[in-house]
Length: 436
Image (cartoon, rainbow, N blue to C red; front, top):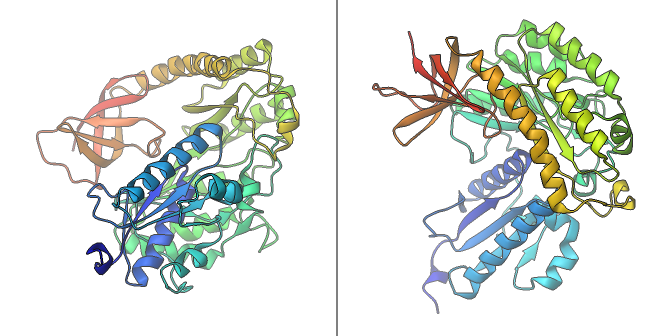
């Protein structure tokens, strides 16, 4: 008998993909801990004997990363370094049967909504009473909070509804309780996430309830920042901005993926909005909340995209001057309505277009950052690397936006706020010094 089998199980959860996946992993870890099963995230010590890979299946690159990660864990199992390899998440949900045939050495495959089935592998019970009791994969001072699951939108490029199902809101009471528990544990910033944030409440309250939810969350003592991610532009509820203006702890920050600017592309993507309507919305948002940070996400290389469409998108960026922009290259996903269209560009051509578009944004970002030199911002310190502290202002979200680099002779506390005067500005980062 191997000595390993006499040891108590320790589970390592590897999370791939978006912040919504990360929350799922944290919830899973909370359930395992509540059942007295040891669990860690992204364990570097390699002292675990079971791995759960939480996969992403959003686009081709994500699928490749997920499969390569699974294969690496299976190889460790072959070498006797692991007892079990389980796979869950979006890729597993979508391609479970095919993957099981291709990689038979995985012990079990699970979909996105099969947490109780995962727990059964450990002879553990699903504890419905748990809300905020999750093992955070983030630093202890910030956390993601998922307010709904799935999506009712029919964007032609998106496979998320195939993997996550229709939109299902959490109750406001449960969200507030979870937020309160997170704050009691030391969380100071909550990042609200959903596949479609502004749709919140329509299914259970029969009206959009995000403004009401924001008021309830803003009342929580000790919650310093509330940040909004993934707001759909069509029929955007402007009341959100009234709450943002009124409540100091709601960041003047809005992540609103627009995907494109050419009307023929927006129509083909089934975005339910025109360029003209988007421009009116952007103007109205900025009019309502002066100084708001607007982040958007774009897609390059959608089927049928022409050089004229690319130029129109670049002109749109130059006109609107977004604070933050992310870009994906189009991924031809089976099961989506766009899959019936001819994917007429090579991966290299898509990448070239994405780089071309981001060059425009890089210049805009540099100019906007230069305007911050000499100004003082409230900065949350996230970590220390190479002798320098790295933090963010309310205009910057985790990993995807600017960092504020702080050189300080005095010790700064991770997870604390400091007033920082900006002394230098670069394309995507700022440098500054702490001031009283």
